[in-house]
Image 1 (cartoon, rainbow over the protein chains, first blue to last red):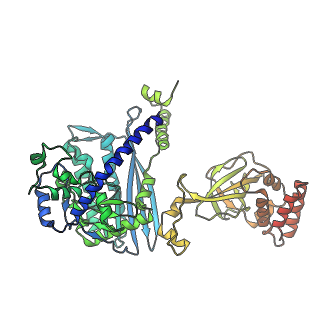
Image 2: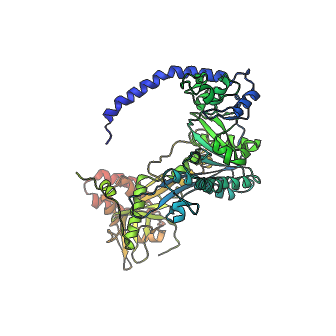
Image 3: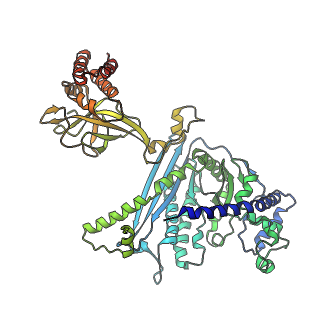
Length: 399
Length: 198
């Protein structure tokens, strides 16, 4: 059990520290905002510096002037939004039957003439050896935990591409994914190449290829939506602007300097959302940026992830789009306007994503019912059910 | 039985004293007090609609006001097309009789309704057939439900009465039965009689 009375004091201390840091944060924010709109900073010079520097932090690629703020266009009278979300029941090593379950929520909302909605919840039970592991032939990687999360993201994108194919050709539409378009989990060195190839090149990127093909012949755009983003790749551009060296090289020039004491730390502790909350009017989007993360540069190709920030009534959200949306003025405008409209209909969060989440969610009770159904079905077929002593002790909490 | 009478919904909960049915179409609820039936011609149940509700499909998801900037109520559903898929209309009933061997018996059946059985509205003929005797009034008077008993009885009698070209003989008969059941509770009797005046 959690002794809340012992935690309460610690929470108080945490809040005290947050308050103490507030003054410094405010100063850093003012410095950052000043830089953002400083016309003396040459855009092309900064862009060149960003592309040539070797930094220990991720820096956004520049596309439009930093201080840009773009109002939304009008939405079409008839349009559709498709969205997917997913959740899973992971492999339970204390359970007799080895399997996992991915539950995908699929939503299509049609607005205007022929308004309508399709809401579906599609569970997929994976117990086959080809689902339980990713195999290269000679090596195997078990699908569970973080890797199962990634596989689920790929499935969400696959379902989105399938739904996009069913949209009428002439109807403007936006496909929305929750979270990032960048499969960050695969960028760590943790997974061998054959796993990355299976999930990314042959998985996620293949879905994006299919979406692109569809988008080439219809008014379809794709984006992801990140609520309350923690990213700092735009603030890090400002670090470069402050950096006194012509081309930055963090390890070389500041490798010996403590974090907090470097020149660029004048804007530390600020996140992109803080920056754009001050800069943008409600409904406006920021300049476009590109993600310079390694996995995007190496694997995304023509789907290179671009992003912008959008100011909603209550928060700043980060919107990620593939390059083929970013460079198409119509698709970019459609994405901006429709996402804003969705957030207005959804009390601050895209309505279609909310509903997709509701369709996807697997509650604790759902999980227990599923496990029980597996056990009952096995018992009906007189299959041996082995479980661990640990699981038994958790289920029967004896005194 | 007339199988072409309107199908109102499907039983989703059932007990000895009543059942709850979900409508196929939102708001397509039978009126309070109307007589419905479920089951087949040999073992059907008769019930009176005693309560209705429209609410979110999932427990814990409550509707919120959405129409501040909309011109009319219809526009709310146009602007939020997922709403009609996330709401459901349900009605609850009190069982007031059942069929056995071709006869209608106005007391509780041996078995409750079956889950997923269809619920049909009773036709005027079925209603008149059922209303030949007034044993069902005792069931309605003694039921423990949210809807006040006098409202329910009055609604039931108004609707049953409407299946006659001249409802007065039926209503007078019902009034006499109520008088004998309610005995000295003159206030309650008066409340019901006032609500069923043709």
